Length: 436
Image 1 (cartoon, one colour):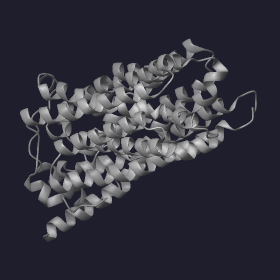
Image 2 (spheres, helix red, strand yellow):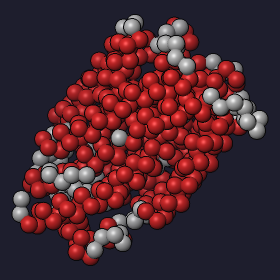
Image 3 (cartoon, one colour):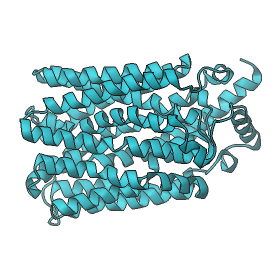
Image 4 (cartoon, one colour):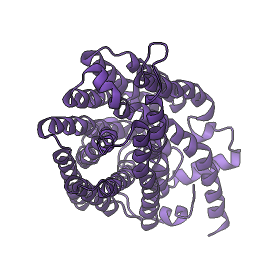
């Protein structure tokens, strides 16, 4: 590696150390506010009289609010800047998440969950877009994986914490599940203000980079192959944008179907609320390591499609095992395999749209793909609840989630064979040794 490449590696590693941990922290509190309803349900459903179907619908309707506001939110971020817009998103979603503590029945539960989705819309695609401002395509899988590791980390932290909070005795006329929403929503509000200090809009505005380091980052990004689309309307006419939402739908179907029901699956094995929190954390701890290693493998090989497909099939196999096996240990091992495959597939998937979209096209295209595919976040939890209520078992629901992942694997291979994405390039050779 030459002197210039060594300097580039040092500068990108410095940027990663400053940005990725903080971005991951933001996503931890974001995802925790999105899925802590799964733990609240352990006592909330009985207290509010929610059936499995009512809970599943309320848990999933979040994604309709998310769907409607995702694209405009990301376009606004591209125009206004990440710093102010991410701050706005965090302040509003934190406030709405805390308001969930005061729902009075099914209708208000549905409304608050819908508003939470609307408030958070644009955060995830905004973070993916933000990474394109800082890191070359050839190294992006590992950085996306490191950022997305916040999702299983949220469950590792949130599982035990949520189990403990649920055990709080009523205080100020509020039950444990109500304190869960209040205490876990507050960090989002506080961190919203920290964003104003810690997240520069672009490398050129980073006070912690010298002028020479800024030139290194901007110079490396300038050498990237030109993106196919940078404008909004041409992006809409590209079939890759629309087709990519289909396999991602299957991945998201499995992700949220599992996430929002796993606490109840584990609880029915005979664990207490606190024990459930620790048991649920285990699959996500393993998933966190797997997805980071999978992203590094994808970068090192310059290969995306088969990394996504094989991880999806691994997730499907885990779900099938959990549906067919009966021993609690065997089921938990299967669910760990399922979670690992799902998160590994998700981490590499988001390198595909960023390989051919830039500028406004990237802002809108990433959000469009994410908004369409995230409707799987409604259908996954709802189908799990509907099938549980009508069959008395989680097996049928887990089977449906596995089918979604199998279809995702088939489609991503088919799309990859017929449509061209950025693959191994000279840039990959230059940046493949950059670490986080």
